Length: 427
Image (cartoon, rainbow, N blue to C red; front, side):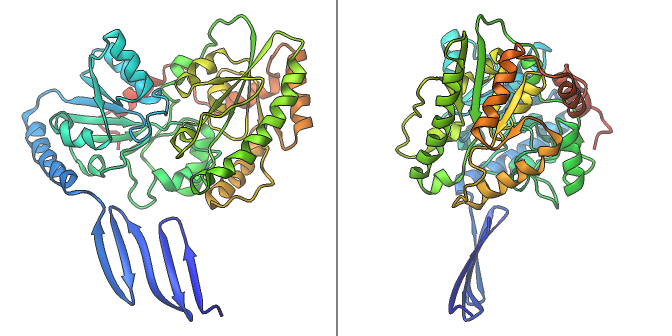
């Protein structure tokens, strides 16, 4: 037996001396519990201003609910990272606004979309904030008059939206939760749920949620709002190969681990560029928005390809003729339109410092039998790229059939979502 032992889990750390627990720290909801030699101390993780703002909103919401006045709809995407593309709740906001609904869209002022809207003078219904806290601290009156909240990332500074009985809190996802099952621990509480309702954008997602008993009876089975705008490819003169490899949590612990990760990608890119160098095919690469959140992190540099800004991911999706990824959920955006997708698991042999990365790789592999074009070496991946070049980037019939069996009926996703959530008997 070890004299000293430390056990670290996602929400709890425990320390043992000769087999006896002497210290533990864990998060329970919005409280942090610290136990020292059997004595537990509890600390509220919300600041006092947030708590007071919540209390005011609760009181106002009851008054407005009883008034019978028309209620607002509130939409927001990621409010914690300005580099995340504003696309999911934004697509829904645009639809609702077009339908004449009383809708607001909350966005960080540092987000590229806000700057674009500001320059065009298109801020009607837009709530620009400098920080996530501002939504509750400064716009409590709007929240009090709201009866539906649609979000794609959740709200990290408070559980207000979960507790307000006067509104429906709907999670519409920012990517299909399938290849990264660890996302279920981040967004779904098996006992009560972090949200009142949850978008379930594919048939495979539904099967997974049923397996893990997630949000039973509160799933909304329709496609993602953004797919209404990504269904058809945008006109483009060249054939475009789009690369997008997803996030590794281990970068947060040690930024230097990013270098070998990118080095592997560059080896693949070099081979890919050589393959297409005598053609009119262009190669583009996008990176996950969290890369830009790392301290002292410079913009990634890849030789031979054009880097796509995080705000331009959706536009690139519409112009892509072939998509290559490890296990990013962006793959479903392309599969939705039957654009060929290739999975290149370039780091499947790596053991990462953060267990979430290892779990994500295992989770992605578990879904291999439900997908296609999955490779773990450079040569096999390039052979499949060569096949699509030779076949004018046309997806095979059998793979189109697989896609058909993954998605719900295509099109009208925003309309379907609103129709379902506005049903009085929907629970």
